[in-house]
Image (cartoon, rainbow, N blue to C red; front, top):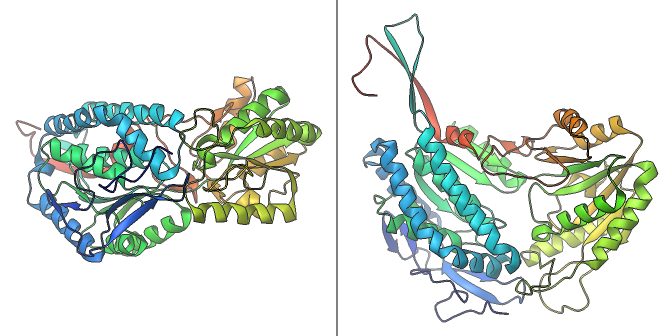
Length: 497
């Protein structure tokens, strides 16, 4: 493997200046804990990176720095144009490091190198789009009123933001949170996943290179206990979290207790409904190619397939045939279509669900670790057929390359089964009839819906219904959760506003 641990404690091709430090108040400082986080390659099971570990005291220091930068610093009162210019300077620093970001992702979670480059180039394009949304956003609007001579609706920054990102898309998700926070005038404390801290270091270096005032961006990698302490800190005005529904519920409870704001983008168990006009072979290629994307570790993954009973067996055979063609290999293997899952506990979690699936449904293919790979966290693409939608494998998020095929009598039952879930993040219908796709999509209780596959555009709002979350990220709508709205009734209009 190319991602060997260098004397600097970093993977090959990743050049972070201070991995042994935290970034707090505009300075790179040692962690008060004195500990380090070790990042393990899912390809080799070897340590590929070490960074400083923040504890509760470090979290408090970061919040204090962000609080001071918001309450007494210039950032919240800086003009939107100046904030946009500063953020674009950050982008100027990040763009030349796209390959480095891709290498970091591959080394940390075993994401395929063939996918890493386009993924991170796309994330950088999305950040440029967010800056464009901010340029067109009206911070102050005049409204009609009968209560005064003039009425203004003003959007002001929510305050200090704790940005907590997951391990599957660490750069794009964290960078989006930071972008929306900075462009609206908030200050931010970044808490990346301990499995993927390197991208947040690169973002912090970009903030430093762009000349952002001290305390506007802070970085504190840490484990769950320290993260919980961060969320509980009364100096945090808003938490933006992407991750599991279980962790999101805890964050929501904490925020509710002190009426702090929160945006929660959580889990999913999204369904793809296969209509009769969609060819079996075409559906099989699409569905097998989707469930193996990022080793199935995508919150919006189409992991349930709902199909007319008369077509169920043929589709099961066709999907299994496609899955058996999938080349499983290390993340730097250009022939690989399926790499490892991100960590040992994730592999064990997936294997636990497969064991439950064997007891409740028909295992058609997969279900084991590939025989040709002795090391690493690999699992075969797995298909279960004749799945009961009430079963564990159909109701709980597996977060791996495991697909459940659910037979139904007709379209009405298909819609009912798709909606019979605690989640509501994404959905799809496989059909060549756009009218039918729209009609069905309007009845599916999800925050996103796509015709013919897993379709996402982070320039548009993204989020979920039900236990898939609260609020939206993406698009111009992504600015609003970082703003408070103030109504001003005046005896006249100010000269500048």
